[in-house]
Amino acid sequence: MQQVPYMKNFNIKVLAPENWALYKSVRLESLRDSPDSFGATYEQESALSDSDWQARLDLSARGLVAFPLVAEQGGRAVGLAWGVIHATEVETAHIYQMWVSPAARGKGIAKALLDEIKTWAIDKECDCLALDVTTSNEAAVCLYRSSGFMAMGPPVPLRRDSFLMMQPMEMALHSVAESTF
Ligand SMILES: CC(C)(COP(=O)(O)OP(=O)(O)OC[C@H]1O[C@@H](n2cnc3c(N)ncnc32)[C@H](O)[C@@H]1OP(=O)(O)O)[C@@H](O)C(=O)NCCC(=O)NCCS
Image: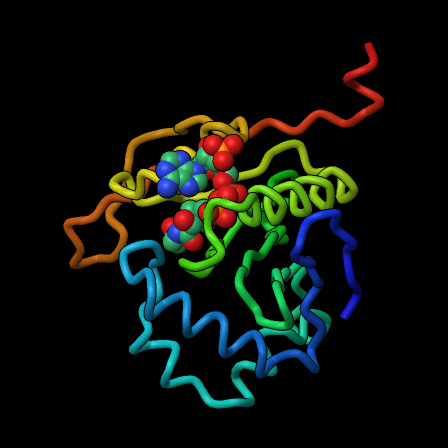
């Protein structure tokens, strides 16, 4: 895995295809811990085969432009987030699967994951970061608002049969070159 060094007591790494078992374990932990934060469910994803998990991280085979990140602390995976640029909307980088384990929260790990995805998206010449957040998820709403995201459009149901609502949020990105003028 390519490692991003931090002054803090955690590291952020880019997940490579061979890290699929680590990815599977942290993603399933996130779905078990925070069922109201994600459109997908633990039941759905725990039914995936190991080859499905391997295929998810095989970005070139999927033709997917993505930046899957894991945060590690003391040798344990404690955080996850993906940046994804869909071919149909190359000016926007979407953030998915953001999660930090309960014991590691409040230490800046989510903010660091966001910053890494923001830097990657600017490097990919995106002009916008976008995500959906459950409206009742105070911690995540505060995280995104304090990072510069703004609500965009009306909330939509988390899942087809869910009473929980997701608020689309976006943040404009400005390249260093643009911001000097
Ligand atoms: C939301 C979540 C990712 C935040 O992770 P974290 O590593 O604890 O967040 P950080 O420590 O980087 O916090 C960054 C900022 O977010 C906000 N924030 C984080 N947790 C907060 C809380 N419990 N209450 C209010 N604001 C909070 C603050 O503005 C904070 O900045 P500050 O510490 O300078 O005040 C984490 O609580 C989580 O994984 N929750 C369950 C899954 C989830 O909701 N994922 C988001 C899906 S959209």
